[in-house]
Image (cartoon, rainbow, N blue to C red; front, side, top):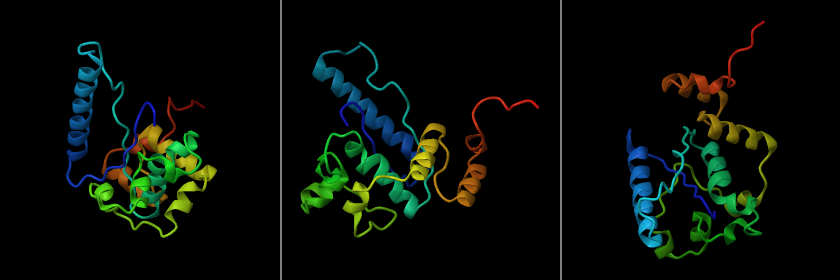
Length: 168
């Protein structure tokens, strides 16, 4: 993307996600300011990263497709998702071990028709549930799993509509 980036991370330990993103954003901010000679002029990042639990399997693949691999296509920066060279999809398609060495194995098996799937538009129900998870930090997965994770991590408020309850 031209003014932001998307990553899908799978932390191994508690606190690891915040730790790595702090390191990435602080390091990038310092380098940005040094390159542009703008030290002390303000933040580069204006908001905290978005995060939400994702059930492994098909749900993980849906998030990867929407937020990571298909984003440039949806923004009309390319005509095929695999042409955006800043994605793991592009890197994996190059079949060059130098380009794929830093990519991790996914927690779900990549489908054989991965490129075709990424290029296929999302359904309206996929879009609605994905956007809800991003906006609210709501777990993304099957409904029973969502409720279980919300209870486990104290995220029940992400399951309710925003705002004050209506009075009768």
